[in-house]
Image 1 (cartoon, one colour):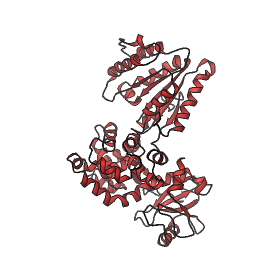
Image 2 (tube, helix red, strand yellow; image 1 turned 30 degrees about the horizontal axis):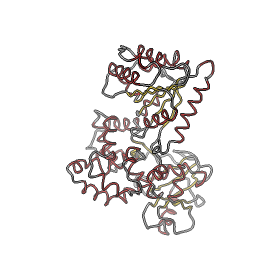
Image 3 (spheres, helix red, strand yellow; image 1 turned 60 degrees about the vertical axis):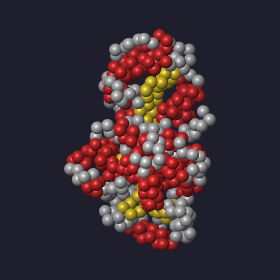
Image 4 (tube, helix red, strand yellow; image 1 turned 45 degrees about the vertical axis):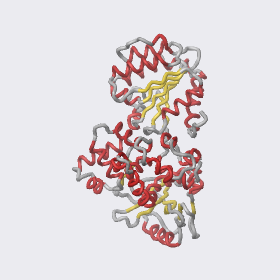
Length: 473
């Protein structure tokens, strides 16, 4: 489709897998499987639909339901199969299989023998949750039937931890599927889709998190506050509802995890302060909630990067869009719903510069790691930050040969993401002091300045938005 932007790498991977199906495979086993995972609403289903449309192959696209039980899943599967363009789809209509074993027999009969086809199980974690035997049945039919036919089986899921476990050695589907991770659209994709400068594209990325649904409603060429001024008047906009729907799906009945997540989203980063902001949760409850949030890949726990071990763990929200939503939208939904989004917008304007300065840091570190051959010493194998309990020092960028405990520090840097204020002599002096306090760094350790508005001093490697955005090109 003309409006489909990005995903070249993922589409190429799907095309390669399809070519393997078309080539016939070894030993008369052309059928292949791919396990596709990614955060909710990043466009996994849309990607697969685009791939199927471009391929022109007969296909079955089945989406499981979180509310359905095993019996309802079977009924929905039969309906999807009957409405598909598989050659034997008509024969499936009206059937009422009582087990997945019987349902897969119907699927096999509907598949073409003379050309490739695509079968999609979307939201596969729901199927496994609703029927613990589904995984084993799928493995049996893949080995006995699907692998012997020219079919590409795509298993898609948003529960990252569960989708990762599907390929573990002790699971039925071990080594049967090639894994693919679908990330959010990148800052470079955002720049292309919205026609924004690199600096403005990073700002937009911090708000939308690369979610296609949000970008589709974002007017081309509009800056952050041009877009937000419209959004806060519409409680049904994708920016408003996407995060809430994702959280409701991830944590349908776990109010404590949501409480802890809200504390982290409000800016608390240490175990003690998170527990206090969450209402003084008992240590065991807090630890369990943090473990759940980590397992769901919603929250990441990070430690300082240096040559010395540290227990100063900090927590942050992994998804940029969710970080923005938790800080500016989620706590103030009542304002937006009663038509006072103007209050929400004004609060964003007051806090934007300070919030953006911290929120952009993990995005910058990701970009530096991606472009490390062009911006950091060759032996760099990790990019993180460094801090102490008192935050003196607190260093935005630490590059090292490995992490979290390095043998060698390869660069030390600072992020200054301000408009109309370059990285200056004052910032350099502060960075020099911080370098002297970093375990493993010395006077020979290179200095790095990542600045939105340029660098006005010598002695540092300067990196701006234009160079950062090439990390995703």
